[in-house]
Image (cartoon, rainbow over all chains, first blue to last red; front, side, top):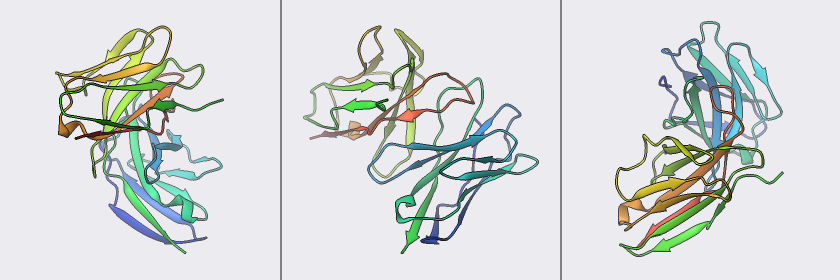
Length: 110
Length: 115
């Protein structure tokens, strides 16, 4: 799977929007962009995924650049419960394993 | 619909003993994945199984580790003759399909401590 680059950490205030960036300049045409998060002492949790178009669900929104070389996970109103490590992962149709990088540790301040 | 279940949640073993970790996938899921997370590190893929078959074990250590997913019952990750370096959190995930579009659902993990 192609590699992704994320900032090590970010801070946000509670109730404010958060934009978590991810660069994936070597993405291939069949790679889906997945986001997972891992809360402290828990297993990873699926957040959202997309291919080319922006996606929304009850947890977050995913904005994908037109050239697909970057994407942004948007949490519309951060809560304390959103404090976690967020992983941006590329998953192609031929692959089954998820390759986790270092992710972004999101800290939410009350 | 119950999520992915793993047991035990915590397991303590002495060096040289065997550890057996169990994973029950979500109902209707036939694809199971095992990942390992060493302390203060990211998750690393170990093995991918479908019912009765190992599809990809490229992340499994060559010795002492084995995995199975029988026709009936949970998937088992078995570690023989454990060493201190095996201390980690082991996560199981399952999916309905396989490939870029599908979502993997993770269990709560088994935290193995080797004394």
